[in-house]
Structure formats: structure tokens, C-alpha cells
Length: 147
Image (cartoon, rainbow, N blue to C red; front, side, top):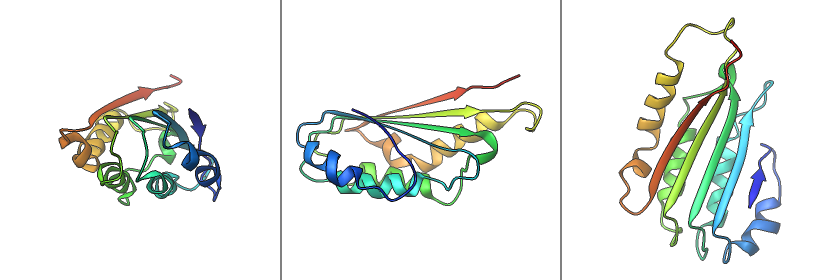
């Protein structure tokens, strides 16, 4: 099931996903930050908490799409997501993939180092998933630059 997440209060998880969670095997959540929108990460963690418990989810794919200037590596929102996905309540979860798609406008950004900073952030903020023996954690960085 593919779901595009908008960082506003929605009842989608409660009304659609929660009833399906006992049979749903794979969940792909696509979300992002553009044009001054608030960071959606905290909302994703809260919504995923609602699915914890008696569920059959084996694979979760998180696709985060953002402009470089809107991307945040701070505030602990990423580590909160790490905590939620490694807390008890995912009896079948064996794989989590995080894909960060960054739109870099070359003439506005500083030279180099951005991808390295994102990779460092993932190494620090997703320490529980990276160390898990039960869950395979994959990270993909996609640079969608317009040179």
C-alpha cells in the first residue's frame, strides 16, 4: 500500500490503515517538506505508533522528499522515528528502508558536504535500527540536482 502523507491532522491511519494492519504486509509512506511546510517527521512517528500492536507489517518504506534548504537534521525528530520503529509492537517487522530524495538547487547551495551531512545524521539518529539484529535497515540518498 502506498500512502502520501500530508503533515496535517488526518484520520487516515485510524480509519483506513489500522483495520488493515492485521493483514497488511508492506507499507510505503511518502512525505516531504516544501515551501515553508512544517517538518512532517513528528507526525509520521505519532501515526506509526497507532499501528503498533497486533499487526502483520513486515516492510516499511519511508520516502522523504525535500528541497535542500528545507531539510532538517536537528530537533530529534529523526531519532523519534528510530525509537518508534524499534519499540515492541512490530512483531513481524523485518525491514525498514529510508529514502531521502533531495532537490538541490546548485546556485543557492554551498559547495559539497550536504550528502555527507545527511549520511552522518542517519548514522547517529537511526542507531537503534542500524544495530537491530531483527530488522534490516537500508538507507538510500537520492540527489535530484538541477545543475
